[in-house]
Length: 189
Image (cartoon, rainbow, N blue to C red; front, side):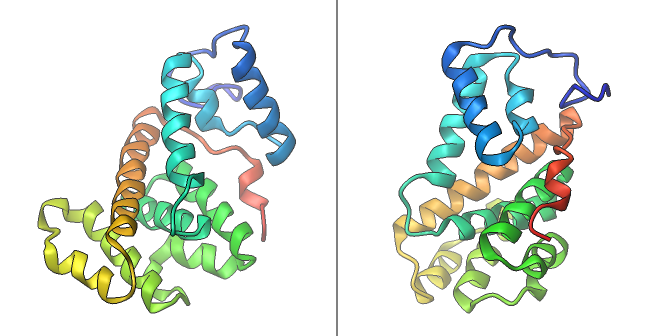
């Protein structure tokens, strides 16, 4: 893969980018110090990029009783099961940064079961991982286990949605050999 290509596929970004997309990329550059390669990977088709960012922004940044950190924790736990290199690096960095705890980010990448997290967060990740490993085996008892630790039905929908989204993106990232930006590796260590 060429160093300037975010994936192994020969799908160059639209050039020039539409004004709204360029503004979005400029905001990323300003706030993150980079344009995440996942955005660059989708930028060969602006409609696909907009669909991806719309769903991502809704699930990860939108209104939810789940904290942004908890949503990132789900992303990492799911990506760990799927062994998605891009998402483990990128979202592991986000967990380290949001939590202020480099050990939490590493534990979630390796095995969320060793992480020092609350019983409620453990139940959340247990559910997300079961949904990832064997979605057809999720049953009412699994949802009830979440209710028993304080999650609402809306929260359960959000947990399932975040887990589902990252199962999809993990597969796209793995299928295209998407590579994380170098900047993620050293963040919040």
